[in-house]
Each structure stands twice: as C-alpha cells, then as structure tokens.
Amino acid sequence: GNEAGSTAQAGGVYGGGDGCLVRNVGGAVEPIEIKGCICRRGKRRAFSFRNIRCEGTDWKHLFLLGRLKNPISWERCSDLEGCVWVGHVGRAAYEEALLASGRPRDKPMLAAVSPGCTKGWLGNHVSWVKLAGLDIAWWERHVLGNT
Image 1 (cartoon, rainbow, N blue to C red):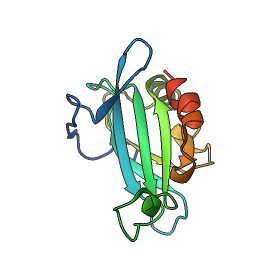
Image 2 (tube, rainbow, N blue to C red):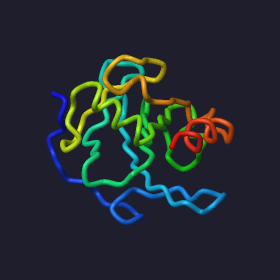
Image 3 (tube, rainbow, N blue to C red):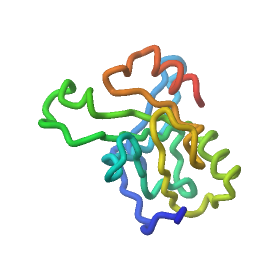
Image 4 (cartoon, helix red, strand yellow):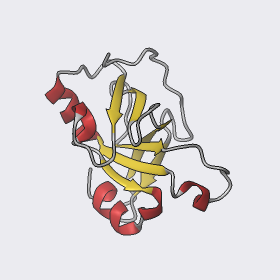
C-alpha cells in the first residue's frame, strides 16, 4: 500500500525534527527530516523509505540515505562512501508529488525509489548522489538552491 503502518514520528535534535540547516546569508533556519534504509531484498539499488510524514511537521528538506549493503565498519566516512546513496527532496516538491499522485498529506507515506530512476510517485523529485560524490557544488545546486 501507499501508507506506512505507524504514525509515530521520532523526535530529533532540533525540536520535533531530525536537525536543521542554517543559511550563511541571513541565518535562516530550515528544519530537515532524515530517512534511512538498506536496499530492498533482491534489488540492486531500490530503497523503500517508510513513515514519511508531511502533516504536523515543519521540515523543508527530506534527506534519504540508502545503503546498498552494510559497511564492514561504521567508523570512517571511507567505510560508507562506496555503499551509501544520498537523496534530497525539498518540501514543495514532496507536496507536489503527493498531490499529483492523489496521496493524502495527513498519512505517513512509503516511498520506493532508486537512484537514476524517475518511476514511482516520488522518484522524479529526488536528487541523488553517491556519498563519495557529495560535494559543495552538489549541495549548493540541489539543497541550497531547492527551497
């Protein structure tokens, strides 16, 4: 189904969210939501992110962290760079995807997405980068330029 089972939302370090971005210019605070998962069984780069909430939240950026596999170690960035994909969706794009697909804003959603694939209700709105390729140019273009 399109809905995730639970309505619980874990609070984070920034109020009810997972964190925030603070803009260099003007100091605007933009709440973020982070979802993570491992690759779907039998699928090379397919991820299913559960319980993505819109109503009752104030996040402006949704970050999707998809692991192709569990790393040998979690101690260094280099352990993760080859097996983690980072996806970003701005709030407006997320709400547009909900509306276009006829999904409600008041229910937690499941999003099945893959890097490089625009299929599915959310796939066309996700900007992906492999963790090893995450740099300031990608961040400025896809995160800071997407509000």
